[in-house]
Length: 145
Image (cartoon, rainbow, N blue to C red; front, side):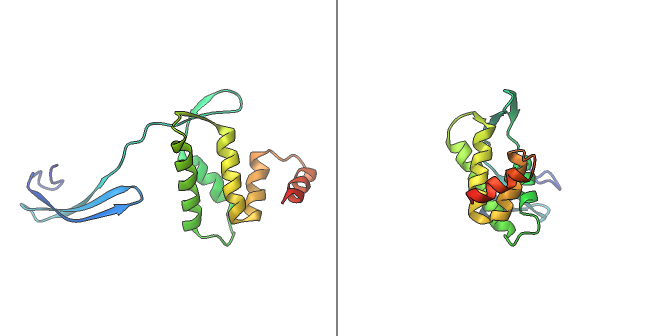
């Protein structure tokens, strides 16, 4: 590793911490005395979703986050709980050990996790995921709650 400021190879690690993304190291250049942070992450293989129409699509955590955050908008659930839930969903998918997962599995797993945190967010997510067409779809889902 080279110093990003002076390209010296003489570095020392001043602090090392575990983070949700991997290992965070604070480094100091022994030549120019500048400090910088590096991150060490485990590189995960790509996970693909098999959509309802049969198409394959790369799993994008950001898409899942956007959908879940919309469901929890203006709800009294902390961002930390939502992030933890999303981490659990992704981890469960990766633990299956498969490179391809049906999108329906992701949707159902997400709905179960949301339901445990907030019923209103659950109905919001379900209305989009299950493509509710009218009030009767909402009524049916509410009865099941």
